[in-house]
Length: 235
Length: 250
Image (tube, rainbow over all chains, first blue to last red; front, side, top):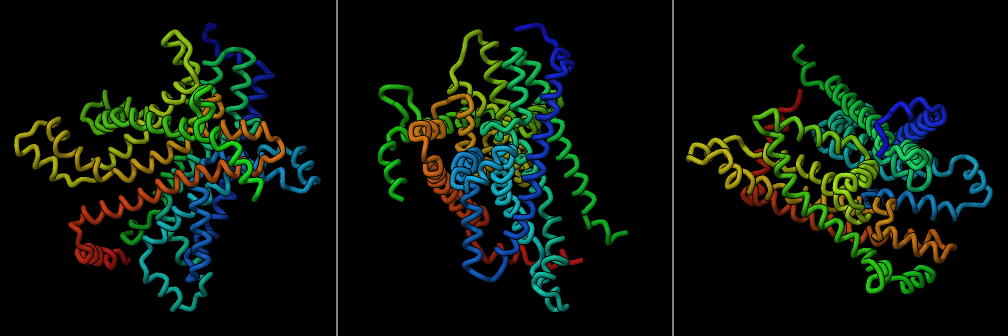
């Protein structure tokens, strides 16, 4: 092993550019799939709570599919498999527009939506049943009761689980490397291959991942405390 | 549909055991061996980490907490790269992808299992430890004969679902060319070239069957343990919950 020299990587303009663009792709993939997952999870949980057996079954199947198949396999199925079934024009367009990152966002988003929707559902189960009845009695429609009365309480209950799964979504964005997206892990692997400075390269990535994960956990704790209403009544 | 059946009947042996008699054991067999080894070796380690996490001594508590946070905050893929690079340096000889994967899984799963074990210990009523100590058991004795047996039994479902996660995590071995199931499927895909959707769909179905059946077992076990813990009486449970629900109203 060569002498430890972190600056050899950080001060090299080519490598620092590689690192920054890798970090950008990682953040974009993570944020994109988080947004997609959250939107989808809200829809999934709303459908699942409808008094319609068929709708419930469909959501159950969706959740079961995404929770019992490895995320990497889902990503490969999208990138290698489903992509090959798309129309040629769309395939060509995707190939020019970072298809790897796009499919990583789609695969991660759809997969994580299953986890988020289960978190929200447990959040709903902890909301007292009288809340729905009260909201309906006050004249809210189903959607209105959901949006103004039930969802806020359910989300509040679900925050700790949602934060944990957000961290694992962020970590899972590194899987995009396996389908060739030029994200952070990919960038440091490339730096390692070119310079043989594995220790320094991996250390940089480890510090970045760890800092962002801890930041997500910290923000999660902050939101949890901010939204805790148990102290409001006392004030 | 015919294509799917054709691919499965041509390649089922490769997907099941890899190139086994003529090469390394691979495919689903390798995936399962990796997961079982990973969890089995991680388990004793995780109990030690959990005990360190709740220890009175900061010298034990801090390193254990650091390990748990590191495993929670660093992607598994990056840990694989670290192990692949560091372990040969430490032991002075190269290691195979399979060994790398086992070592990685043991470290990673030990950290996650430790949190499960800790939650199990902390969920027990405080009186258990106090009663055990009052009866004259030492702290290690109370842990070993009173606390751990109950905590580990209660946490069986969580551990089983951690095993399912481990099966899913072995797919990352694909990145360092471990001959597990995903690797076998990509070999099949490279031979056929024209049927990527079919091949990866079959791969997804195999994982689904394995993980889904284990998840079902987990859920059944969980129901059974809950009823047993609550003395088997459903009526008791309801009456115990009713006041707290109405009490939660603002």
